[in-house]
Length: 381
Image (cartoon, rainbow, N blue to C red; front, side, top):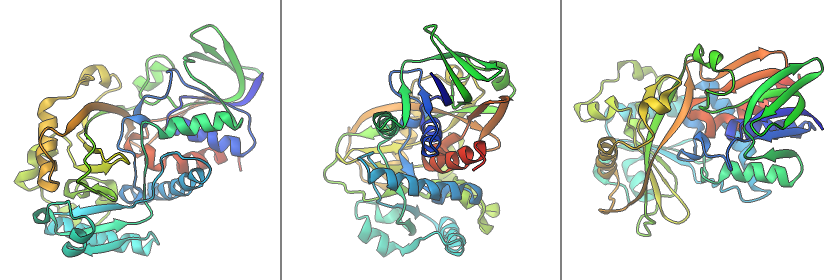
């Protein structure tokens, strides 16, 4: 059987490329090397927050919101529209929030500015002493990252729109006169008109020489998850002062250029730490995260284990914001993603074979919207 399109990699970027191609009526094969997707798309917070993206990528994030909500109407993909709130803890962060409010309001992206009193009323579990003000984005989403992308790919497979094959590691892609041939580790082959390689941070098997020169970096992130905490109710994605100082959207604010780093943040900034909270349906809370960087062999260089010192810094700052009980942590892990200096790495290997990866931490928020434009461009829609 010959397919119109083969997508290598069933992370959020690959899955949504397959999804949009199928919506154009294409016969698609989605190949995943593992038993289930277990890479970057399952190792993150599961926050869908276009508000944090640059103006260029915000449009992809907003389109992603539309696609997520359309999917959720068809089945439960763990998508919840609970909004996101940024909490300012000092005057500089509040000024950035006010500037961001105006930028997004002019662009037509809905948001609501809350006073300290308004934030305390809406989020009574947060420490009042931390709060200066807050900026709320009601349309933003959260998902369960360990389930969402696998549920989407399984749904596409069940509906017959995309043929999904797990435990299918691709070893080579060969250009033929009339298309491409995929060679698997088990010796089987598939044929297609086009191939997209959405390989996450796996750079050793396919096109290692290209990735060696790609300027992709690997980011290691540390996150923690609490036991279910029935006494705490976080109704939205919680993003804090360190996030305001880090996210790309705030870099476009006028006062960002003069933003100074207070002493209390120095050690946290050195480790790329900003504090996020996201509560799951069972009451457990994901807390994080940190950022360490290395080259494309970053997983080996940085190590797969969490650094206890970094976890300690994260939890110390987290407890400054939210009153968490002692001994509440049930899990801790390190996640990884590939990040390109141009926001995403798109490379034509040759005619009919294209690499699309290195989307960084924007994948969960923007991949669904980006993949729509990417597929429309591929098929000249």
